[in-house]
Length: 413
Image (cartoon, rainbow, N blue to C red; front, side, top):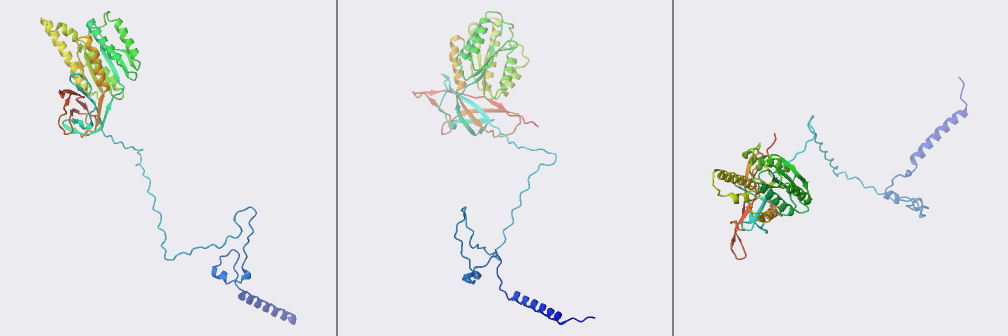
């Protein structure tokens, strides 16, 4: 085996000494912070002044903050501080049952709108200035709370239904004079239509705001008044039912001006059926004008069996016309002379245009399709019946004109 020389032993010993010296230097050297490492303020003050860096007061070329941002103080976390509460869980979205679509809930609160006219009995003038507290509304004998009240004077929507048959030329002249007077008092905003009837109905003019169109239709019928009409029969029940059907398609309050003798010949509907139909017309008020007044004035009291039967026929016809108007809150007129027509038609116009509109929610909320009877009373501030006087303190009689009832909506199952 070859022996190592002295140079090799010295080299080995020098390497060990160098390694030990390096380790000593590493353990004895001061710990210097690395660049960018946070140094507390107390340790910074312990550094020699020569080692502190002087701030660079030279502004940057492009403006903005300089390179020295200063000391950043980071708050220490308090060990006793409670952790923040967790956020509230989000409410789960509502989902409809499987197989069911989206549903919308509607709650219908029934309301009844009632037009009330208050007219002096003698002059038929409208009585203004009444307050909501002056009205009491009863439904089937139970007082109702009025939740809406206003006086209305608005344009009208009316249908003139006129008898035009071969009953006699004086009846046709009376009917045409009445229709002409009504057309004369129309206003530009009014919607009016005109229909005649004998056995069937005939449209003279559809709904229009041009009253000249109504007058032209009356003139055309006037030129034919001396010519024989097609039929002498008059089916007033069927014509009235058909007219109510036409008006039911129009929204809002409507008026039907019925100009006829009231005699029915051979309608498909009976009197009971047409009265039931009139009751169901919730938004239509019927005003009736009998055209047999002049004829009755000349023939009333004449002897013979035929005269007595004729008197009974026209008396029944007048009662039917009056019933149509009373059931819907309208008025009935039976003028005997042409000179009475302007005043009668003026009263109709005043009653139509000047109303008190009352709104109430029935205490009986059942949708059972039953007939609800309505009664309207006028009272003073102390709840006693309202009394009216003229300028000489004489009592004045008045009429409260309103429909006598309505039929409740029938719930559909």
